[in-house]
Image (cartoon, rainbow, N blue to C red; front, side, top):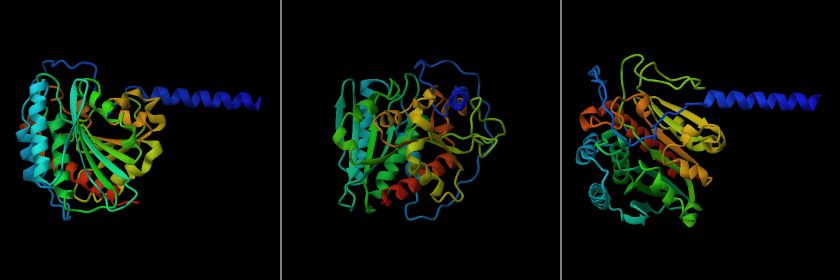
Length: 333
């Protein structure tokens, strides 16, 4: 009788988790690469003024926005993606890094690393995809993520840390996470990898009540009734990565909603739709950092995803949050 009650209890818990997790995506929907016409978008109210962050690793507003402007073109065809890689490589070299091109079937990833001072060789990887869907210049999706990594490259170039810092720019994410799936086939590299931060859209915020949409049954309490917070989605088996976002100095910066996902997303398949997922499959802790994509921005996969629709205060604040979290992780033992 006791065993029967235990099994019934477990069954109820599984049903509750599955029902509650349906549609619980805080990031991009990958069902179709097509661009669809959207209704006119109302001009958002003025955004808050940029807040000064006192830190030796303070991001540059001008440099972040310059990267967004330089990448203001569709990055879908082979020629366009090659042009993007050229820009990324040149910027990394300016900061003293030695980037490498890693070819795979149909695409090319860009990789660079700066060895740490600890002889163990443990590494933290920061990554973002650089391609777009057809018809969209992808300022938020995902020039915003690329810009933050290039700023991390500049800031950490002369900032020694115990752990090795790795940077990756993935190709063909929009085609089904192809670049990141190719990246994780290098098992020798994965052996030293102690955590991954993936950015996929970190540049849009809305400041009116109710402008943020939520999946039904989401088991978290949002920090705001607006879309002015950053979201970090991580696997529950590697909570130290999520804690880096909670413990990072976020004074005068956007709030961060951290969402721990159990069982590598087995019960929440919608949480597997960005470049962190292939690392979860390999047992590597990874965090997706996002502005929640189509749950917030009306410019998702649209021709209107342009630099003029990047919310500068939020974008710069999000970049600083990621820099602070990376600094925490590469200096931890």
